[in-house]
Length: 224
Image 1 (cartoon, rainbow, N blue to C red):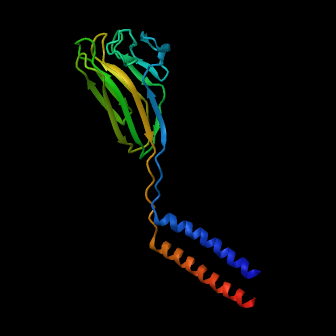
Image 2: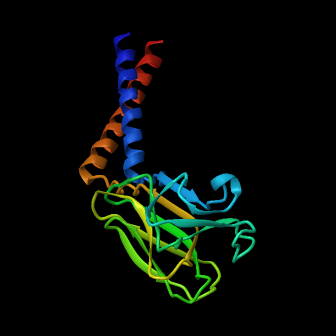
Image 3: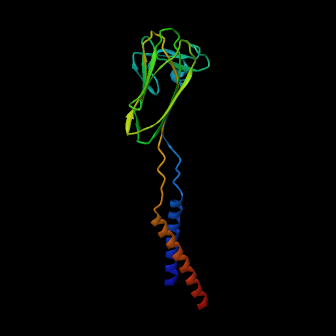
């Protein structure tokens, strides 16, 4: 009885060692998981209806002057794009995300949005800022259709930041904003490489138990 219990204990030890060996021989390939994401095309704002000097956005605060929610047949310079934001209301305005996001070192950040040119020739610009992670100023020619902008970068140090779009210059016709997306993805863990001594120890343990099982099996057969 004692001999059988010892053999089972050793077999259990081998099962654990085998699992450890399997992990060690292969890298840890863990799929990236989204930490957070923002996606906003403004189409559901104000019940789907345009409104000048709009300041009741679901995901944004109007952080400078005012902005206009246009489209869907009202001041619709680019039909077929639903609602979108004129970043110059009565004066150059701006939007800042209501949420301040936390970014960890190693996170991969993907930012996207679409911009279109102003209806007039005042040549406004818009500056897009995500804390210390991203800062870029954009121009569009008068009447230029919506074109996508995308950026991807890796966070080098832990930080918090809000996303903002700020109009500069122009009159009451600014660059047009639509389809904003922001996603942060946790970095993939480093590959685990086993030490040669660990592999040798595991292999030795496995071999020892195999020999014990054979030895005990023969003794039990003889006794019968």
